[in-house]
Amino acid sequence: MPSDVSTAFFVLWLIVAVTFSYAAYWAFTVRRVLVHRLYRRQATWVGRMGVYFVALSSFLTLALSTGVSSLYVNVVGGLLIGSGFIVIFAWMDSTIRVARLSDPLFRDTLRWSKLRYFLGFGTVGGAIASVISATMSGFSQVAPFGGALFLGAFALLLSASRSGDITLRKHLTWTGLCTFFLWLGSQVQMPLSRIQFLVQLNLPDVITYVFVAAGAYSLYRSAKSLVPLGHVSIADSTEPAVLQPIVLTS
Amino acid sequence: MVSTGVGELDQLLKDGYPDKSAILVVGPPGIGKEALGYWFTQAGLSQGDFCLYVTRLAVSEVIEDVKAFGVEIKGPTVWFARDGGQTKVDINDLSGLSFSIKETLKKNGERPARIVTDVLSSLLMLNSPETIYRFLSQLFSELKQYNTVVLATLEDRMHQPQVLAAMEQLFDGVVELRLYEEGLRIRPLLRILKMRGMPPLPGYFSFAFAHRKMEITAYAK
Image (cartoon, rainbow over all chains, first blue to last red; front, side, top):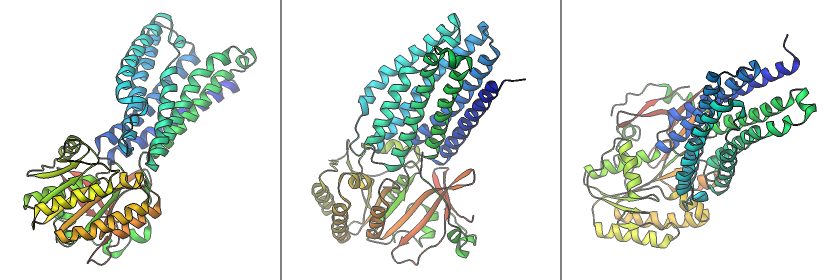
């Protein structure tokens, strides 16, 4: 019989996976109706972030709860964490570039147009290092994305404050919050694991998942705020003139 | 009437935009409202109209976007742009911008002119709405002497609703492109909020960009 803690752990994972999946669904739905390549790319990366975190959280939940630590599992874990560096970087890069486009003064937040190349190399380096590290000493020893997420959260929240676009400001704020909660989630487990009382109750994992769940919810809100969405008023949509099919040829 | 460059839209508007008018296209970023400007320019060039494109972007960025829609802008277009145009756009200098536009139109002579611009949202973010309202009122009344149709795009939800309402009042025609949530789907819909010389056109129309053109169909929920 599963303990109460493992049941709570499973329920939290389920909430996280479903919320990330729902966020990805909305991001890809928004992507389908956008035509500008930069905005489409941004929606694509929000969607990929959702899919990525479903995969990562599922893998971590399965691998950590079963305690399997073979070479194969470590390589898969390393590849998942490594690809996360790339996905998170591409997601933040596309978001900051869209924010610049909507800034009437075209301000280059944190000199991102140059910094992105430096961080890009750092990201690829981090991805390779995490794969090697996971293979050599186990995927659970790799602390994923710490600096990148923190810097990303800072850049996104700063871009939000600079953007004159109300919609984008909302989107960037949710994206920044998502990044911040994921950063918190990636950082709290280690210090909490040192507190014996919490470890006995298996709470470090649960607390980590609560932060990841908050990140998942923020990503869902971020996906829904990619574009302003209205609701068709029934009075307008059922006007007889509209219901009559009109023959339109180009 | 002046052709919009989109067959279906011409039919909806009974042959196009009114002569000597100012048209506002409102929509969220990325929905494709700039494409209406591209087709409008393309149609103007193909019939020998004078075309002026005023953009806050660089010419190369606009051209890249134009190509992405499969639009071919053949013919001489005068560009006011951040970079790469005949005149550099400084969105902080309203009187300079107004002067340059009028001087360019004077040189053009009697030929019908079309002006397409995407600077309105930036102008509204950098200046007070009252300043922009006065600036546009004066500019539009002067441009009407030159047989000009102006098509401006404005970002939806980038400005306060009262600012948007004031802008809509200023223009002769307003075309709205918006995304609507319908259960788990999103529908891009078009509405003609107003058009000079036309009775109000109620209801929504679905639109899509496909095969290098904009397709508009009747919509019922």
